[in-house]
Structure formats: C-alpha cells, structure tokens
Amino acid sequence: MTYRLVRLLKYSSCVLLLAGVARAADPESLRLIPSDSGVVIGINLEQIKPTKFGQIMFSQVESQAKAAEAMAKPGLDLLRGIREVLIVVPVTAQKGHVLILVDGTFDPAPLQALAKIGGMTEASVQGVTVFTKEQSEPMSAAVVGNSLIVAGDPASVKGALARRGGMAGGLDAAVAAKLRGVRASHHFWMLTTAPIADLAKNAPAEAFGGALQGDAVKSILQISGGLTFGPKLLISFEVLTRSEQDATSMADGLKALVGMATMGDGAKQFAPLLQSLDLRADGATMKLNLAIAEEDIMKLLPPGMQGKPAASKTE
Image 1 (cartoon, helix red, strand yellow):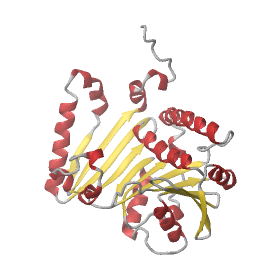
Image 2 (spheres, rainbow, N blue to C red):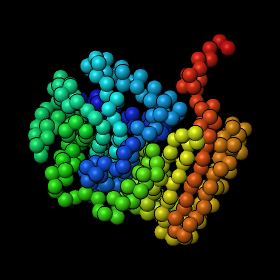
Image 3 (tube, rainbow, N blue to C red):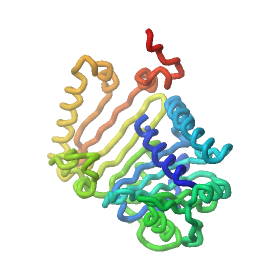
Image 4 (tube, rainbow, N blue to C red):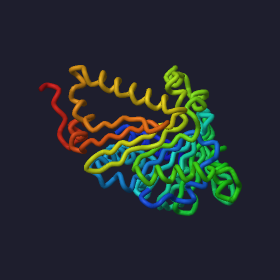
C-alpha cells in the first residue's frame, strides 16, 4: 500500500464527515487503540452506504478514488472492501501523528506490490510486513491478514502491532466500554478520551487559534456522540462538563447562538431544519439531539450532487 492509499483513507474519512462497522465492535481493532488517545473517530461505511445520502457521498469519494487507482494500478479498487475506519489522534496531538485502523476484506498481494512500486521501504514488525514512506512526515502502513489495514506515523503503527502481539498499552476497560456504546449507536461517531483543556495544549494554533481557550471549552471533560443516517439524519452528542452549572450555561449559550444564527435573511432556510433541536442539561452533562429529514438535507446540496445537472452560468 502506498502513501497515496494512506492519504486517501485519511481524507476520504474527512469528506464523509463534512458531507458525514457494520458488525459489532471489532475486538482486534479496539485492542489496537492506545491508552494515550485523545480523540477516536469511527466511520461505519457499511451502514452509511445504503442510505440515499451515503450513496451521494460515496459517489463523490469513489470518483476521486478511481482517478487515484487509474494512476497507481488500473483495476485496483481501494474502497470496495472497507467496512469500518477508526481514526485515532493522541492526546499530545503532535503534528503528523495519527493511527488509522481499517477493517474489511483485503487482498494483501496487490497492495504490497503497489507499495513497492511507490518506493516504500519494507520491514518486519511483530511478524507483519510494514511499508514506510520516508518523507518530512513519514507514514507507515501494513495489511494484517486479509481483514485489517494499520496506517499512520511509524511509531503509531509499531505501537499498534505491539499491542496486537500482546503488549499492554490499550484503552482501559471503562473507556473501551464507553467507546463500544457510542459506536453501537451511531454510523459516524467520535469520543474524546481526555479533557478538552488537555487536548487544547497541543492543538495547532494555525488550525484553531484561540477557539479552544475559552472558559466554556475548558469546562468540557468529554465529548461523545455522532450521526446516524437514514430517512432522518439523527445527530446526538453528550458533553460531560465539570458541573451542572457548566452544563446549563453551555446549553443556554448554544440556544442563544442558534437563535441568532437563524435570524438573518440568508439563514432563514436553515430554521426549519432546527425545529426538533433539543438542547438541555442533565446534571453535569449537556445533551444535544436533532433529527433532520433526509429529503430536507438533499435540497441543500448542489444540483450536481442531487443527480440534477448544474445550472448553466448563462442562466
């Protein structure tokens, strides 16, 4: 597998989030998540893809994938075998450090041949062949058996394979149980495993500026939740804060922001989508729930993504 594939897995996941495992949690994948994780993101491709919204998003991603495949190795289908993607960012949030775990069904041979063509170096780690692309931010990747791809910076990949080999260092039982619960309830989900203040210490300033330095953000101990696709897009998040007062203040503040954001003429079209928004405090936890009809979301997409021809510039 080449660096191109690693980038595709990483950025395709982001595309699905902005636009957004079929099975119960894969025990092996979960065991490979390190104890120093700060954020874990999961994408259940198998359950997203059959939905109308998922089909549109996949068509966009697949068109880009086909172009990459044509340049790299004609006939290689990079997306077909993928069931689930886990993206793990360490609490230190060091630049270039990320662990990507891809569950599915893969044929290692063509991927390994592609890695060699791409000039990746080869080494054995815990009995698994690992390919590494030496560059300013080195990236490694390995196909484990025919059901798992492990990718990311070299240290993260080696650590994951070490845990697979029996070395300690995985998530503790309570965090792993929380992760399984969030994953079971959503198609696209996230879980922070450290206070946001700790994550903010190492967050790139160019990406967030001072957005993570406010008092409200500092009160957040954990964020969990995600999106479930279907006839209605269900959005559900829980934010655990330091106190009931913090949770109440956060809920009230978000309600005020939503109200102001939908008052302008250009934003009135979004007001009906937020009619079911439920923002409330439950003890020290702020809960957000929203259901939006799939057909209403479709109306907001560009005509080309709705299966309709784009409007002519002369019209």
